[in-house]
Image (cartoon, rainbow, N blue to C red; front, top):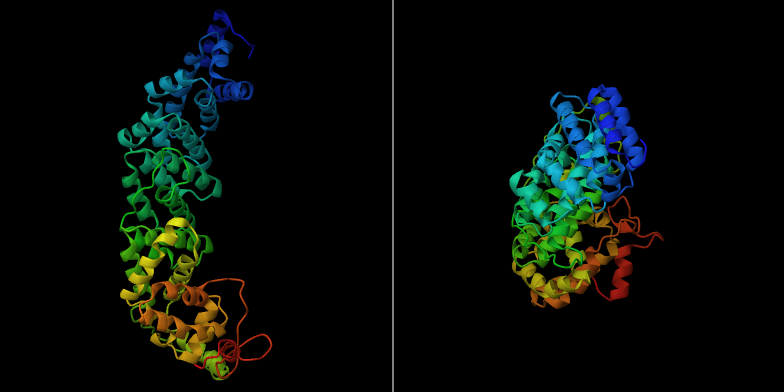
Amino acid sequence: MAPGMFVGELREYLGRWDKASKPARDKMLAEFVRHSRHMTGPELEREFGNGASLLLTRICAFLKTRVHAGDASIGTALQALAVFLGAASGHRFLLEFLDTGGLQMTIQMLTNKKIAEAERIRALQLLASIANSGFTYKQMICKDFHGEDAVLGFMCEASSESAHELIRSVLIGLGRGNNKVDDMQRKLIRCLRHDEALVQKTASQVLRQFLSPAAVEGVTAVRPDVALVDSVNTLFGSPNVYVLYEAQELAMTALTEIETRQYMIDSMVKMLQPPEYAYERPVATPADEDLYSGASSAAKSYFDSAETVPPEVVLQQVASCRLTGSFLKNKEERRRAAREDVCERMIDAGIVCPLTPSFFALPLPLFLPEALNACGQPAGTIARLGFFVKASCKRQPIEVAGPLSLLFWPTLTSIRMHTRTDGRPVGRNGEHAVQREQKACGTNL
């Protein structure tokens, strides 16, 4: 492609395009992308003798034809359109692209499952370029064509990390300063119940940006929807550590905001008081029976208790304890301001009794090493539980923060727990952890 085409050269170039086959057009587009990738809008006009718009129109028509025909090899055409829409001072190309129905075509490509994920990512990049052009175009995408639904649908189908990173960026850009952000919040809350952990993580990250945005001028936080609480509880049953982190951050936001504070506290109490779960033991084979009869007493007790509680319930119980300690130790200004009211509401909601090991159906000697180890705490810290109960019964919420956070602050890399055959937890040096803590605190349990 010779630089600075004259009228005759432009006519010849467009004539070759009109007569070329699909493979030949792909080669022309690849050459155009290679040569014009970093050009600005005025440079593109000068390159094609003020006829760049004629080439843009032909590329749009070519792409529409291939999409409607079910041809999935559209990557080169999308790259060529990205050159026009991403060119600096090329707002004119954006308007011409919209006039030819390019926005509607781009959204349709996101919902077309016949198109490969890589090509749909390129289509999403075009949508991001349009959304970043201003508030008017965000409203056009969401209000006129419901583009956020197409992006959310692609989020539920995409499988790569790169696709989800781009989806997160596009959704955050569409939501900021958009009148439909409340509607987007409700749709994202529904996505939290998706089966895929990657979808749950992306939806949680976008919601966190809506509810607690970074310091961006002119961007205000969205008021949380009450339905967020139930969806977050579902996330607490996930074994994925990234999902659990996002769920905890959303739950802490729900505790901070007055609209969802009481709902979140009631939900935490409910998670600590799971419904009865019946498990029917399968018929044991002789090999299983022999293995069970030869196990130690501690292993038998753990095997019997594991059959009565599903893993999701255990994860939710641990998550509620972790959330309590994390919120009380958090130093963020708005969360610190809400701490006293949260503690008061927790006590009123009756969260004290569920936090005590005696509330659970498991025997106390078995609950201590298993539940505290799941929370990532040395068993000796149970000695501080008495201080917590006394402080809560006296309705002194400020005093609750210290012992409660010491008891339930989670660390996955905490001290390993070992259990004797009698079920009593011991430390690394062989001394009983509970007795060691009693000596330090001067208390007896």
